[in-house]
Length: 343
Image 1 (cartoon, helix red, strand yellow):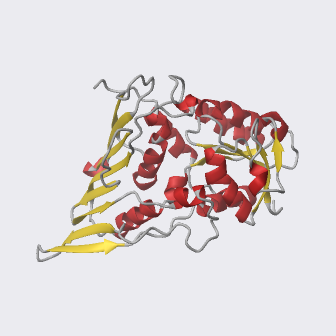
Image 2 (cartoon, one colour; image 1 turned 30 degrees about the vertical axis):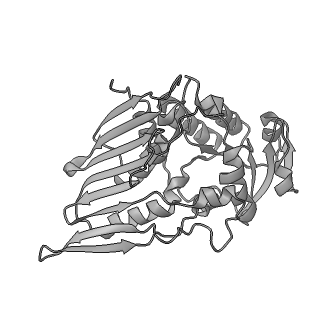
Image 3 (cartoon, rainbow, N blue to C red; image 1 turned 90 degrees about the vertical axis):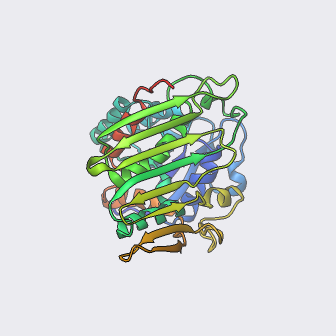
């Protein structure tokens, strides 16, 4: 298992392939970016002249050199394509949501074990600059015991998405399955499986078939309550993270710059990659032993999705456990598929 590098292919060169996958497979010497699927427009070779652009998924899966397949096709196809890739003897890195149901997730992990291949889910937001700072603040103990944790992803997008698969009332569609996996994965990575949960979803955009608002209320042992929220109709975003504990509070705007930088063509190897702009510092408020308020501004850590790809490599080559575990993905999916309360 010491062969180097891992030879990889991407099933789509849409937004996620172009921004979140190809640049990292290309610049990380642990991987060889060999191929991508482009059914119509052939644009990938303009930036990656050495790759193969296949016309179909089957052609890429039949490439015997490819060991790792990135499944980044529309949500409702993730399960079928991941299953197909596993049966072809490939490891898979699956975009969120991994599948449409917890039963499908369990089937994929079981099939991976049967085939002797790894099933990994692309939860890149664990490597966001803002979330890395949140994690450090919590783990430092500066806030004491956490009482409330608020996490949100606000956008204002009144028009329906041109990606029609996101707007059709079908499996794994809607905002809950689009942004929910990001927020729930961050929560689960910090606090584990909740004791109980409430899910609220609703539709507000004109002629929309799918939810554009959701809130999860998650309760944990020892009194912790988590609120995870997203909406497509927020004109003035609130802080993405607000935390209250027995010793103080912390808040931080959503300010990770990696997606924007990658969209503009910056390589992950650029020294400025993943660095937040000045003025986006997190606000830490502590009540000291004399009951006085102390305020500190905390700079975010450097964001870098390369950490996820390094974890993929170490799972495949060194059999080091991938940090996004099977049980965490199952917990996430059970929350996503939970029946919504009526609003």
